[in-house]
Length: 159
Image (cartoon, rainbow, N blue to C red; front, side, top):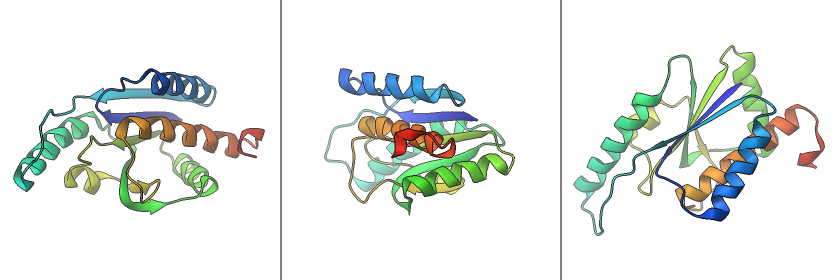
């Protein structure tokens, strides 16, 4: 399976970069991983609703340009469906068995995701009702993808 992470913004903190590198390496045992960092719009607060929507629109355009045909698109959003780790693993397996070998996970910037990106998604996934920094979310997502692969392969990591 080819896993693509489309993430708005760059990760700057060394501890996050180390964790991302570690889980990227682990995921490599199960398939191909590609992380695409997209430009995050700069802004200063406070923002009007119109300014927020314009920033989301611009970031959304960048995301939509990166999505490939025949890709199962998973957008991360607090309003999405929540899964247990086992359910998440089963969902990845369902996608693979369904004939799609590529999954793209989309992580928005600090303002979230444009509505057009959410509409394009095959699944809107929530990790929690909490708000996480989008840089940290990348690490959490990679850990859960790795966990899902270990569950599907009946490996010990998940125990």
